[in-house]
Amino acid sequence: MAIKVGDKIDQYNSILWTATPEVDGVCSMAKKVESNDLFLNKKVVVFAIPGAYTPTCTAEHLPSYLKLHKEIRAKGVDAIYCISTNDPFVMLAFEDIHNTKAQGVTMLSDGNFEFTKKIGAQMDGSGMGLGTQRTVRYALVIDNGIVTVAEIENGAAYEKSSAEDILKKL
Image (cartoon, rainbow, N blue to C red; front, side, top):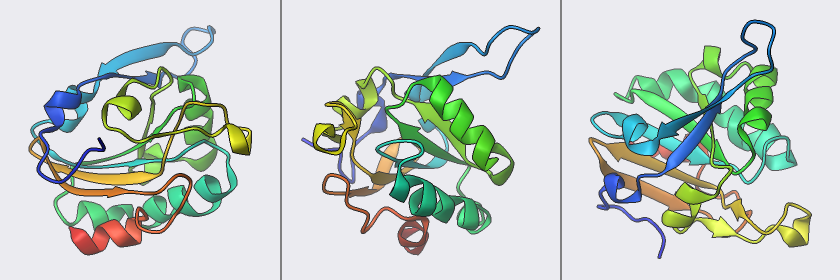
């Protein structure tokens, strides 16, 4: 069953990943972070993309949040997170190429498919060449640990999880 409005986010606690930029001449390192550490005791927007560098994710979904991050933050949102089931190093490269940190969006990897599966937002992307374990597009607003908005797309659809859609609901 998919996550829904009224759910307590702590029941979906999962390990997500970030990657740190190159340290002391060594390749970047993956870092574990618990979703509860990111999503509890604040107001956050979490949106998911099926894959970094895929056409809709790159040309429409992510740019909608980069364009409207200030307006979203002005509604009392403390953080904006983008999740994909890509590995943390792909997400770091995607972050770098789009300069997301400077624009108020933090990239997170759910490379082990843990959070995506727990919230019921998984899809089989093999028909699109994306592999069997991908996230659908979605957008959540989590306020002090409670899901107040849950817009879960059907498969790879992009109809209700844009920043414009979420901004109207904040």
